[in-house]
Amino acid sequence: MAIGVDVAVLVGLQASGKSTFYARCLSGRYALVSKDLFPRGARNKQQRQMRLVAEHLAAGRPVAVDNTNPSPQEWGPLVELAHIHGATVTAYWFPPDVAGSLRRNAAREGRERVPDVGVLTTLKRLRKPSPADGFDEVRQVRFDGRGGFEARG
View 1: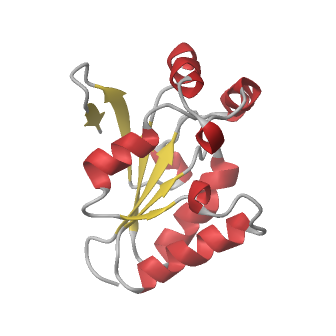
View 2 (view 1 turned 180 degrees about the vertical axis):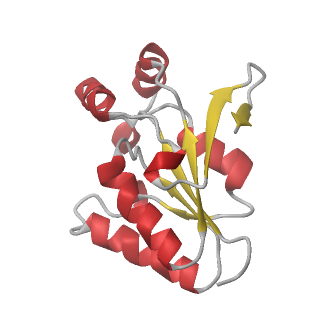
């Protein structure tokens, strides 16, 4: 395993800025895996995601997982897989801003928009990640007020 290989796990509500953060801050350095990129009717999305992450890690490429990843049920297998491959795991935590997420989500069109109940259901499961969950680092991400982001460890 190449030194410095990391799995970035983005954790937050739908429309919290995760995909935009990836595009602006991680895309040049991390391969992207997201269930949103799979065909709508694709089966076994979790298995497919894990296989893609494993392939990137086996090739020595850092990878970012851009899903809501609201709880240990979702991020636990990613943490375990990263450590099996000798990679570090960084959680990028997007603290919930329900009103902001609902507002940004309402502006989405087509497949991008999720029903409001989906955002609220994710909120019920959303938990802040911590090093106790196996993460090597947890960085809190917020909008910086200038169209960008701040990520603090």
